[in-house]
Each structure stands twice: as structure tokens, then as C-alpha cells.
Image (cartoon, rainbow, N blue to C red; front, side, top):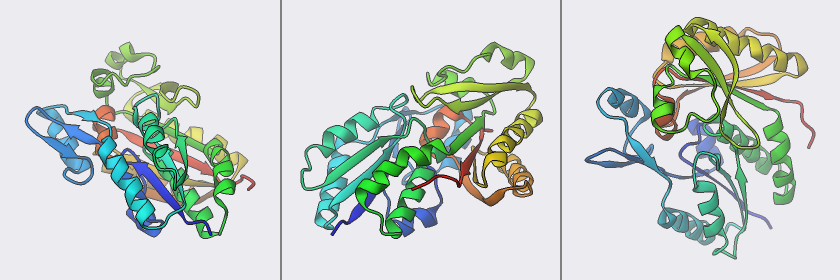
Length: 286
């Protein structure tokens, strides 16, 4: 009899109910300041990271090998037979490769590690769908086969409040037109499925137009399939709520979820003012 565990890192954003419901294990990143180090999402909240950015921009480090070993040991003791891990993009972090290395030492567990080529909702929604499939009684192999199909139906877009933090953190990826910041040009950003880094999807002038553009882009996905829509933000509650209210009224939107603050580890690089939207098409065949 298979007993399947779900595992991720603290860059993942999804609602607390989903984490509890499917007993998702989360490996924490470290948020590092000059005088102190914090365990992501345990010792420091997203709001504290954003509020502190005026004083000091933190650095980060991936979950420790020791933490990974402890989680695998714990899963073995809890009689899990299989593990599905969804990791932050290997284009952003060494977490995926570290997890692969550690999992190979735990032969009692059959482990599949998926490189999300994304972060935040790009990890969280996959885990939620995997949890649903476990609940439906699907086998480990069936779920693993389904993950790329789930991923292909997810469209994650976001706008930064400013590109300053992504640039300072070296996570600017392939976002073009950064010089346009002077002209208030706002890139709509997405994660490339091959490299797992940020690229520019489109560019518009001004904050309001950038948020509206993400909603307009969503119409093309909604025209193909009913969608669930997920929204995250970095200290931009009012803008996120405005986007939530507008999207909720669109045709073919099945459910709209306000996930809330982007995880601290992602916030270090995305900065305050970020708003992200993920359109998850419901039409994919098992």
C-alpha cells in the first residue's frame, strides 16, 4: 500500500488550509541580515521582510542539508513509502539539486523531485493538485505523470513595484527594458519553462495599466478553459484586492483565491509592491 508524502521549500506560496490538509512538509530557507539570521516563515514573516527593506536588504541561503535529512528521516519513521517534492526553480536556487542528492541516501523512500522552473504559486498550485490526486486514490506513478500536464495549464504572471530588488539580488533574469524604469515602464514578467528564470511577457507604462494588463492577458486563458485564479502580493494588499475583485467577475473564472503575502524568500528579490496572478486552466486529462 502506497503512502505518499508531499514536500516543498519555503519559497512555495499556497494557503495554510492546503498545507494542513495534505500534511505538506516545508523546508525553510534562511533570511540573512548583517547581525542575525532567520528561519524563513518560522522566525520572520513576509511583512517584516518588506518593512525592513528600507533599512537593510537581506540575503538568503537554501534549506540546509541537515534540514533535508531530518525531513526524510521523519517521513521514513511515519511509514511513508513515496515522496513527491516540488522545488523552487533550479534557475534560481540549488535546492532542487541538493534535494536530489539527499533523497538518494534514503533508499526506503521512492522519491520524485520536480523542478518547478518557477516559485511562489508556481510551486504551491502543483502541490495542491497533487494533494487532490492523492485524496482521489491515484497512484504515485499516475500523479508523477500528471505533474507536467498540471504545469502546462498554469500561467503565472507578475509585476514588480520596482526592479531595484531583483537587480540587487542578481535575479533579474531576462527581463528586458530595465532602463525604462525611468519612464515608468512596467514589465509583465513570467517564468520561462526551460531555464526557470524571469522573462518579459509584455511592457506597459504605469502601475495601474500593468495590473490591468495582467487581467487582460488572463482573458486569453479564460477563453480556452474555465480557470481557477490565484493572487499573491508583496505588501500590496490594496492593489491585490482590487485585482481579486475585478478577476472574480470575469466569465469562466471558477474560483478566485487570495493567497496573501509572497513568501519572505521570494520577497527578498521581488520587493514590495509585487502582485502576482496565476491562471490555472481546469481542462487537462488524467
